[in-house]
Image (cartoon, rainbow, N blue to C red; front, side, top):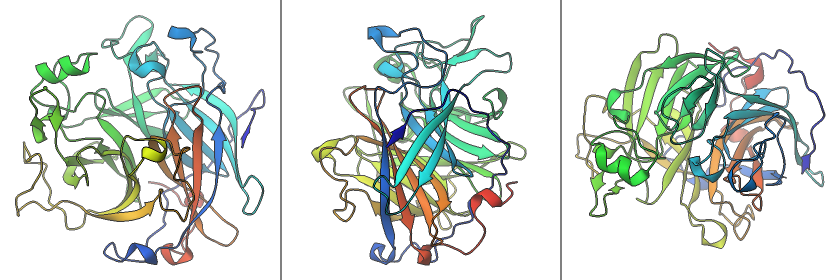
Length: 416
C-alpha cells in the first residue's frame, strides 16, 4: 500500500543510533534454527512522483520527478525511513539530479495491509557550493551549475548526517541532513578508475585496475564503534580474469573498512560470490565482525534463482589490504575469505514471494522498528530501475526473539 504524500512536511529532530541487534546463534549454525517471518510488503507504483520541484521531462518523456530506482534504505527511528534513488532513469544516459526520499513507515501485524509507506519529503544532493549532482554517466567534471556525476548506491546514518557510497568514483561522501556535501573519505587508489568513460567496454579496455563499470561501491554499513564498511558489487579489474570479449570474470569481491572518526583506511576482506554471475548489493552491520549482505542473480520473476540475504563473519578472514592482486577464483590457502551462509532465502516457498512478481534487483537492507512482541524488523527494498510498469517494493521481515538481544532499540541508542 502506498499513500499519497501530504503537501508539506517538516522533519523533526530525531536521536538515532546504531542497531544493537545481535544474532545469538553462531554463523556455523543451521539456517533452520533462525526464526524469520514475512510480516508484509508495501508496493509503490512505478508511475508515482516524488516531492521535488523537478518538473522538466527527461529523455523519452520520462518525468524528472519519477519516484523509484531505490538502491538503498535506512531507518531513522520514530517510524521514519529514507529511500535512496540511484543515478536515475535510462541507466546514466540523462541528467537526473540525484536525491533521497523521506517516508513515514507503518507496520501493523495482522492488518489487511500490514505495511504502508507515505512519502513526506524529497531532498537533492548538493556539493559544498550548492551545485546539484547529476546521474549522467558522461558528467565527469563539475560545471558552473552541476557538481559532477554521482551514482548513489548505499546510505547510512552517522550521527545526524548521512554517509553515501558513490558507484562512479568510487567514493564515500558524508552529507548534512539536508543533503549538502560535508567531507569525502579516501578510498584505495587502485579501486578508482584512472581513465573514466561513459562507455562500459571502452572503460574496461583502457583501464588496467579499478572498479568495474557500474559495479563499484554498492553496499555500505556502519558498525557500533563507528567503522564504515563498504562492499564492491563485483571484483576489481585486477582481481578478475579478462575474457576474450574484453569483459571480466571472477568471484572475489573486496570489503573495505574506513574509520569514520579520522577517515583512515582499515582492513580489507574477501567476500567470495557463490556464482560468478551473482552480484552484491548491500551490507548491514550486526556488530564489529558480523554483517548481513544481499547476494543475488540478475533474473526477475519465475527466472529468479538467487535472492539471498547472507550472514557473514569477518573474524577469521584474512586482511588483504596489502595484496595488490587476488586470483579471480580459487584463493591460496593463506587467504581466508569471510565465513558466510544463507540467512534468508527470499525465494523460499515459506514466504510466498517467488514467482512472476519477484523483482530482479533486491538492493536495500536496514533494521526497522520493533514489533509489539519485541521482535526486530528487517526492511528490504527493491530497485525498479525507474521503469513505470514496475513497482518498487518494501518487504518487512520479523526476526525471532531467539536471534535478537534485549538491548535498546536502534532509535534510542546514541551513535558515535
